[in-house]
Length: 319
Image 1 (cartoon, rainbow, N blue to C red):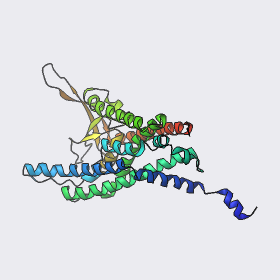
Image 2 (image 1 turned 180 degrees about the horizontal axis):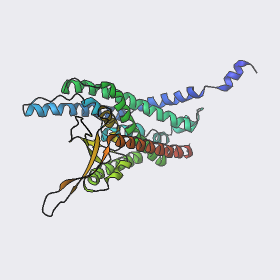
Image 3 (image 1 turned 90 degrees about the vertical axis):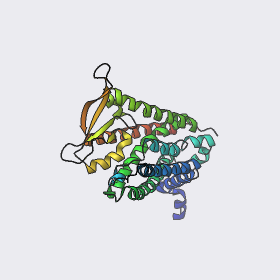
Image 4 (image 1 turned 135 degrees about the vertical axis):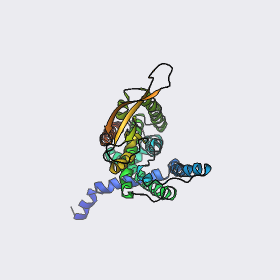
């Protein structure tokens, strides 16, 4: 057999086939008008968050105070994380089964595991590019509204934390979509879980002494108050999200104030007839809160992705 014949039989390399899947998925996502719509909404929300302080300050005749750490400690927020995850992942797998494109896709020289990994990498690429543009926009807007910004070298770190937070929701939506093979069920199921956690977390955090359990579920987690553990200029009124959605902002805050701590409170009745008062429960180092939320996020991502891969590998394809 000639060398050319052998070359014909070997076919494209694993990396070539993998990048073909990634390109296919990127084009799939770019064509989704709803993804472009969410990007527009994200820009609108960032613009609104920057414009509101200016509008309110001009209303009362005061100027907006300087905040050199605004960009580093700001975040896209839980709702933004979930929206980007939903539009990126809800029909990444289920849409293939609904439209029937899974049949010609699997006739190519690619395994289901390669398809799954390619779709996952494409989702990471899309989120990375989108968040980069949003953070650049936030840097420009934050500088205009709050003055010169310090520690901008930390922006990539906080952005990576935000991507990690988003991937918790991406993995969860992929798991639901792979099990149901329905984009609608993935969207409704994901939204239901998100809203349930979003609504219940503040209630549990405010009225329960067992709010620590919230640090082990996706979302904002238990709400704490940032304080100083030494001669550090940290405001005692800054609220901190201690769950998986607070990783990005907490990374920036930790680098700026590594000795800071987080105190958790609940509302309680001190005496009959008196209004509820704030009761301190316990205090933890910000470093512990941050490390725990990162570990919890990684565990959820790993578990949800394994579930999604398992059901995608074993899903029946009806031609």
